[in-house]
Length: 315
Image (tube, rainbow, N blue to C red):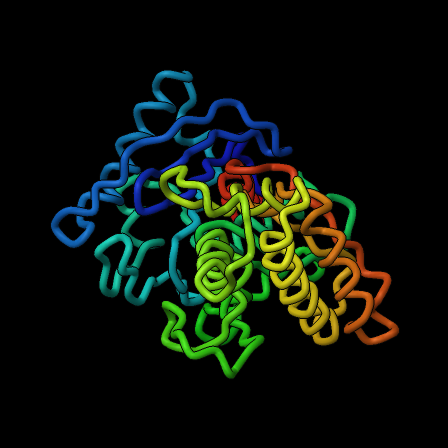
């Protein structure tokens, strides 16, 4: 930080963009969100963000000269020069995010992949505070990830570092993942993957199960709730999920050797029915020198992205 007293954090998603005004020491002064307008190949997105920032600073009585810059998390790979090369969810092709948003706002801009930025937020002010290295795994509709080593994001050569969801754990999987590969951990431990496994079990087994009751759309929460009630079929699914996830963390630990893993996203809230199996498989599969890696829950929830984006600017 130089003389700026405030920073802006933006977490850009396909539906909304979350924004926050932070003090230089990481205290959130105000947070809000705007709709993401991906019409016209996403050409309105950055101007909308710039307008929202200008209006909020004016409302708060903060002059631009008191703002160090804007950090922004993008749902796609971000190259070192701040250029995003194709982001389907936003309708973008090649977009120089940092330079364009800087021109629109008159502020310095730093951009990063949203999962990596969220991991940075958790490292800074969330579940990873106090550790020198963490790996964050977000278990939602898909699986995202971010790796922080010594306070720096491990972004990789093409900005695709931390694509944990696409680690292949079962090369014999007949169904393709959304990425085109087969047997990615996202196919088993994401909310979508858990429902997929449950439907497979229901189709291949005649065993009685709470999950056979017609309650509308089956969800991952339904599967975990049934498992907590002792439902054998649901337990078979959750055991498989926990085992695949624990194995994945062990593989990562053997390469990165972080101090801690942070699990976030809706699936992470399942509790011991999932986490006990994750711990057991991790303990079994991790190299002996890596077995003491902590497996913890993330703390910032949906705010991790704006915290991490602010930290991009603060450095």
